[in-house]
Amino acid sequence: MGDSSPAYGLYLLAMTKHQQGNSDAANEHLAAANARAEEELVDGSSWNRTMTLKLFRHEAEALMLSTERQPDRSSEPIRDKPQKHQRIHLMQFRVSRSR
Image (cartoon, rainbow, N blue to C red; front, side, top):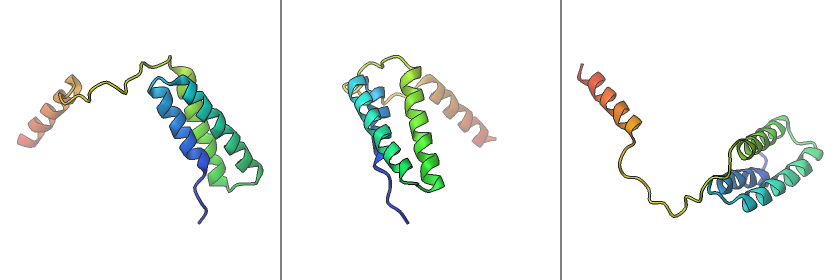
């Protein structure tokens, strides 16, 4: 069994930084991931490695191109209170279990 590609983590890091609103870091990680993926693809990677790298690249680029810069959420508190749709789902679950 082969080792995992370093590009996987770089793609995930690029998407995470983008979601946090740090577009400079996101672009740096995306460029590094693309460069690493290209190196691996030239070496004749297995079909599943090739497809996974292409999938990660597509997902990262689609996310970063389709959304505006997100506000920095790193300092926001985690919400303890369920959102409205979560409360409705919970109520539906309780009703269905009581029948």
